[in-house]
Figure (cartoon, rainbow, N blue to C red):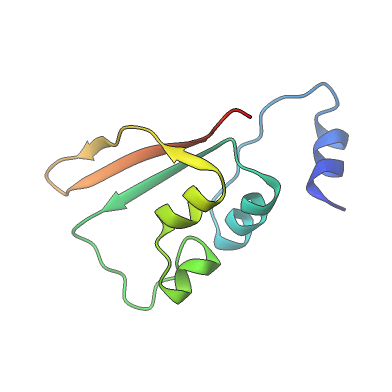
Length: 96
């Protein structure tokens, strides 16, 4: 069942859906269309052998490029934890 069918079945009157993390889920919603994506970065943390947020990132494409190519634009980054250099940015879909 495609996402549009699932959404109609679960939200016949419309509504919001929160998408929990996981690359498979993130890749799925890149295809079906995120309205927003909250990207949090820590400039001081490197996870060798970790799993990238999107499948395309495995080939070196930055997450920001993947989001931009999916039609999302970044808002102003916010500092989450200055001591640890953690920022968050909400990417939103441009209105047609």
